[in-house]
Length: 404
Image (tube, rainbow, N blue to C red; front, side, top):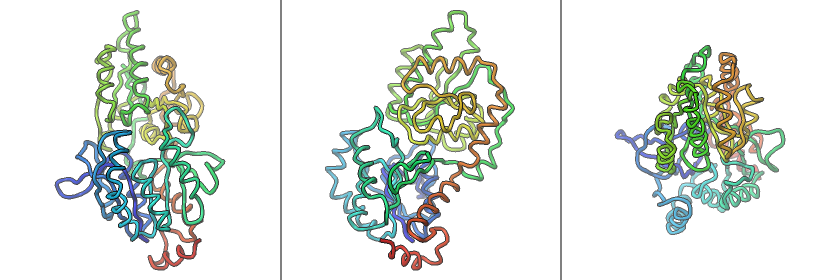
């Protein structure tokens, strides 16, 4: 079977002509590619970035022109080039047996509409917060309404998250991860290590408003302001911000304005090896998202034996458990509560080895192989053919053709 995946993620070629991208996207696309005989990946071509990973070696990557600007300006750019995007998408959707659209995103949403118009089977995966909150946009609402309307029959709809009740009729929950099974076997963190002196905190993710990094900087500034009141400086935690994004310049200015240059460091985008190495030297990962689905960075940290201070959004409680089990929950957007939580974590007499062991044990089942197997099972049940074990591509297409 042939799959056409459509993404807004920016990709680039290295000097050898191999395609790369950032975050968990390359890992997840490789897992999707493993379920099919052929993959065409239609994505946006952008400039090279730090911390890239290779896209599936067996995928044919089709680069599209990069929309200009952000938010409303980007949407206007897509509208101005709409005939070009529609022609490009239709050309490659036409040759596919299944169209995979990771949502939300403007170009994948266009791809969804093209696939539906051409009566192709769709594998839609919604990766944003399924629950509406202050960060939910009109485009998010349109996207969710679109996949609700088309779910079932020939269209498999997966929603990133967890729960006992389905997110909607004919839809399925799917956790998110970028952890490979061999990585779990290879990465052996020191689970016996105590809290460092000073405590080492890390944020991992995109530097953008919805991630709540400004709230974290505010919380650190509040802790930093207490140091002159007799608090020893070596008890003041140090924070490393790992990642990049449109808010970086504003955050750097905020750090300087609040006098936190000595306790907050910007590491930029790291590749996977560098990220895992950094996490193994971290005591606590702080992820203060204002909106989230099922945060992969929480699992990345826990794989390295690092507990998480995070918010309730995106199934935070389900991942963290009770406070002190694998981390702690704070209200989203509340810098005072976050400062108090960090102060408590860095000062309380905790059994750090036991805490690290619980984190590590929890993540060992959340691998990309388990993720792909779950997608395979859901598609097999709905389409009547297991993607991995179809005898021949023609046989699989014959089965798919029989599904209404």
